[in-house]
Image 1 (cartoon, rainbow, N blue to C red):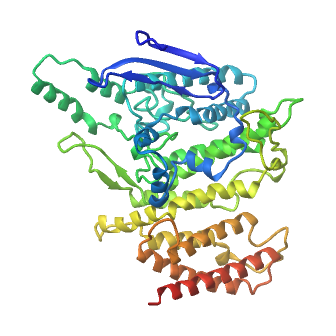
Image 2 (cartoon, rainbow, N blue to C red; image 1 turned 90 degrees about the vertical axis):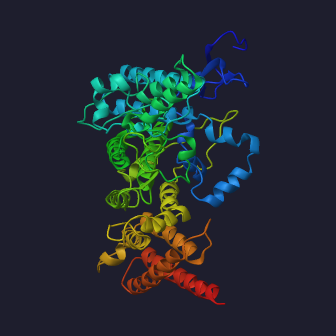
Image 3 (cartoon, rainbow, N blue to C red; image 1 turned 180 degrees about the vertical axis):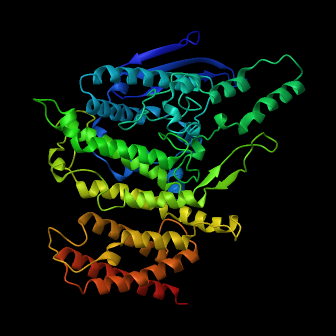
Length: 539
């Protein structure tokens, strides 16, 4: 592999679970001299301990990193200048492929244990082929294309006659999840089995030989590039897919034209599998560790798919088309207001609801941690399952995005980018909607026999309401990671004032200890926030 005369594929055993396609380039001409693709054997070991233990950092890494400019700039300042490009553009396809393999394996075991092994082998071989094509693409100079997964809807992706010509996506340079469908829906290929139309287009531009003059070559190249508006050639890359970026159609490990439909499909799959996942993946005589890993895989997929929908709120689609290209779109297009409201409603019903996951209480008592102490293995700090913390981490991440300074500023700016006689999602509507949804118990609370075991407001909802109040306080006081529009701060002030009155009135009713204390504490926190804001506002 070190000899420049040879291009190689290597299967190694480093225990690191990665794949990569490095190449060496002539610095004078840009000509690629040789390439060597490496697969680590642990790449297909899809039951990974990392899915047992979620942390805020691991969830942030799954969903694009920092969500506000201040944190993003701090993170960038810690990377040496000459390494910043590599940090943005490194290939991390391997990082989540084992999670997707694990999801596929879980679904197959649940559907038909007898044939699961055979179907898993087909899935893994298709997955390895797609990764190979991806890495070869890098050796040829292709960059990631995280928007290529939007060329088909989820139904068309199951049509093998269609996808055998183009693959499931427009490019193998995307990071695609395993293509799974819920019960009753036709199943297509699990991964792309051929390169996509974008790949052929990009290779044509980079490698097609021309015999004419330099001027005619430029003309011919421009003719190829002018196809950028064709739907199958859609493109967005690493610097379009950071946590701070606005395009909700450019994601890692999503699929289909509509992020909302993908969220619904993945949620349905997860809710079908969760109730009996422990029994399906745990064999007689084994411990329950694999059950916890499978549970974590399902939970991660549910949270990630929901986060994709959250990106629709305040979203702005980005296009790189040039003037005069056929079917060219403007560089920026605000996501239709109906889609933003639909996304908000979906999130309210799923992750922000009273029962975000279809799990019976007994399941949590079977989520046993791995007891394997070895070099390079992170041992869990808690052997039992931290139910509230794990759910709160995903709720936190979604709220972090929706209420980030960037999202609220984009929504506020979009009010000017849309004609006044057209409907638009405003920051005032968003905040009123969130407050009403997250504190819905205040509007529906009825006299009844509440107890600490059957409270008026469940523990999951109380946690969510605290998370939301902290964010409102941060916005009102301007203590968040970034600058909020002053219009937003004044709307939040009004929301807090109204909420305080409702909490105080509700706390006078006969309630369980938890709910009563929660209402009183929340009202007191709001009062301190309002007092502090008044003090800050004084000259």
